[in-house]
Length: 231
Image 1 (tube, one colour):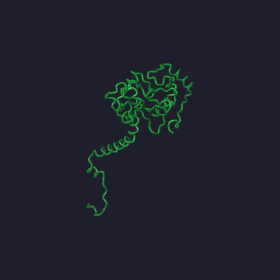
Image 2: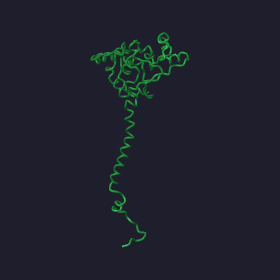
Image 3: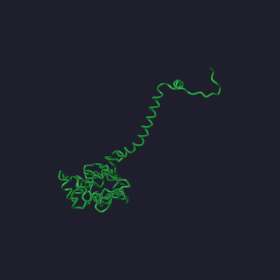
């Protein structure tokens, strides 16, 4: 029987099979799955990335215009943290050493060293040394050095054993969880105020005993509300 001219013709399964090879269905399923997985990965990957040490530049040494070896200054020479970071007890920021501070020593020792070229250039030009920041909290986080060090929280707790670093790097993760660990249980990290700048202080198995006493004596509060850090 001949087809009627102009009549609609329906595509049958047999017709489709003659157009597409047998593996087409599998290919479509794989493509749909790949699109779904790819979309999920695109959404999740950035959230995973920001939680990695690489995104935070953790443990990454930061080059400075002056090759200042903290192992020599802090460990060998025993220079206290506050000598160079002299606003740590009275301001939100710890401060960085001025050229005058550096030249106070190096005008007399190693004054001609090639490693001090940037210091000499700053001294004669009057322009500050362009130090690069090592540890930095996000702009939406408020952090005050003064309240932490005056309440007995040591430099090494956040910055690590700087006296063992040839080039200083960020040791702490600085995540909100990391901060809250201390805010929830300050007795685990607090130390006597006189030991704040000590790199080697270790209360050992007496930490909780000493910590609880210091928390009470110094009036340390476990502040965990949002406005403590986000103002």
